[in-house]
Structures are given as structure tokens and as C-alpha cells.
Amino acid sequence: MLLTTIAGSLPKPSWLAEPGRLWAPWRLAGAALAEGQRDAVLVALREQETAGIDIVTDGEQGRQHFVHGFLEHVEGVDFARRVTIGIRADRYKAEVPTVTGPLRRRAPAHAAEVAFARAHTTRRLKFTLPGPMTIVDTLADEHYRDRRRLALEFARLLNEEARELAALGLDVLQLDEPAFNVYMDDVAAWGIEALHRALEGVRCTTAVHICYGYGIQANLDWKATLGREWRQYETTFPLLARSRIDQVSLECAGSRVPLELLRLLAGKDVLVGAVDVATARVETPDEVAATIRRAMAFVPPERLYPCTNCGMVPLGREAARGKLGALAAGAAIVRNQLVG
Ligand code: ZN
Image 1 (tube, rainbow, N blue to C red):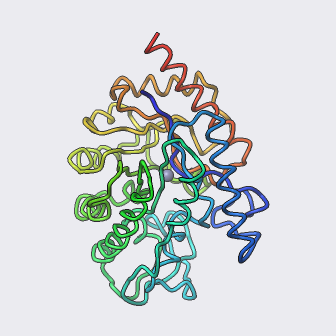
Image 2 (cartoon, protein in one colour):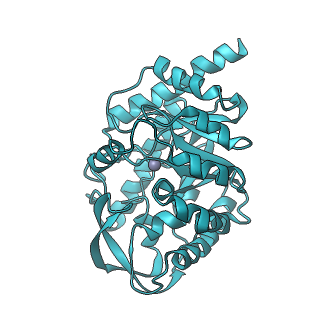
């Protein structure tokens, strides 16, 4: 009950990549990079285990960005043709690759990473992949010229990948869909369909992560425009409640999401963001416990998984370590009260 987990990413060690920024360039190359990434996974696993996190990840140490890590293994996506576009409805600019031809997975993208992480922890293991809609929103397309069609093509590739990864001993496979909070009409029109295709026949617990983004300035500015209450989830949760996805990961800590919206996810596991990634200030265990208790008014404890709001990759390592510890300690406070 109240098993803890994280959205996915952790900061990279400074010897591996430049700290404190997204799309941070690697500081190693070739075989040294591969070795450095594996070493960083060992550190990420150990830090989660030491903190007391129950369902751990590889900290996404093997990818430069949560979307482009997968795309680097896809034929038809040209990284030599990078263009700068506005993403997430033009909330911020990003340099993205271009789809120039039919999509095909060149080779398994993350199998070696999952096998390595699986071999080095006995805890439950989660792995994250970008969701089809978020992928489509994080590249330029000169070939398909139709977002739904492109999303369904990526769903096909993600499904091949997800089935293979689950077979390596994953407990949870999560698709990250921050774009679900931006294009709510598309979620209903084809977003859920694309998720279903991506996760069809995947033999482990399936999850989708929907957040208000990393704690970067463009996101903080955007949140300031969303009004007193953030009700984006009100549109998507009923669709997800009817979907075949097992778990929904969402943002609750320090946010203006009205928690009664969690009622709309009845029947699903809910990964409640009880740690804010938009601030380096480390929550106290009591603050984490208070967020969990507020969510428990709408989610039964056996379906509630205390989690982080989003990935922690842009944070400093000390802050991330502190937040892991606060998350586990806060969950333990509530758990002890429930069983006591
Ligand atoms: Zn997120």
C-alpha cells in the first residue's frame, strides 16, 4: 500500500552531462559514453533504493532528452535536418529533428538499458517511453503531414519496443504524454487510440504520465496563465478511466489542480505527484504526507502511488536526492498511520 515511485528521470552526474539544463550535451563520447551511462544507472538505482523508493527507474541516464532518446533509433527521422519550432502549442522553442520518410525501428532502442537496470536491482522496475502525441509534437514532419497518422505510425514502433522491453522483466512500462494537457481535443480524437495501439499486448503494468512539464521558466510562465484552477485533467481523466491503461501519473504537489478531479479516475491506479519538480526546495516528509492525505480523499490507498510531479532531470542532484528521501519518508508516515 502507498508504494512510492518516480515519474522517470533523475539529474545526470556532472561527469556525464552538463548539469541543470534540458538537452544537456554529453561530456563523454563513444565507448566512454556508454560506460558512463551504465555507471550513472547504477548510481540512480542506488540513490532510489537508499531513499526507500519502491518502484525504481534507470533515471533515464541513457538519453539526452525524454523524446529524442527513442527517435535516435528510428529510420525516417533525420537528426541532420534539425529545425527550431515552437512546441506544446508554441509554449517554447526547441530544436527538433525532421521526419523525412517512412518510419521504421532500426534496432531495439532501449533493450540493453532495461536489461542492465533489471540485472542491477531487485526492486520493481519501471521504464518510460515518450507517448505518440508528445513525439509528434516534438519533431518536424515533411513526410506524413498528418498528426494522427504520424502518431499511429509511432504507436506501431512503440508497441514493438514496449513488448520487447516488458519481456526483459519490466514491472511497469510508462508512456509520457505531457502533450495531453495541451491538445485536449486531439486526446479524444486520436490520443487514447494511439496509446492503446502502443501498449497493446504489453505484458506488464501500463502507465501514462500527464503533467504540466519540467520546472523550466517557459512552463512556469505558462502555468501563470492557466488561472486559479487548472482543469485540463477534467477533459482527459474520463477518457483515461474508460481506457485500458492501468495507471495514470499526474501532478498534484504545489499545483492548482483541484484534487476532486481525481475522482474521475475511479478504477485506475493513480501516481500522485507529491513532490514538486519546479523548485529546488526539498519538501518535508510532513508536506509530502499532507499531499498524499489530500489525494486519499479521492483515491483509495491501495490504488495510490506517491510519486514526483514530473521528471527531475533539470534539478541539482542534492535537491533530487533530498526529494527522493522526502517522498519515501512522507509515504511512510501515512502508511504507518493506516496500519497503526
Ligand atoms: Zn512530466
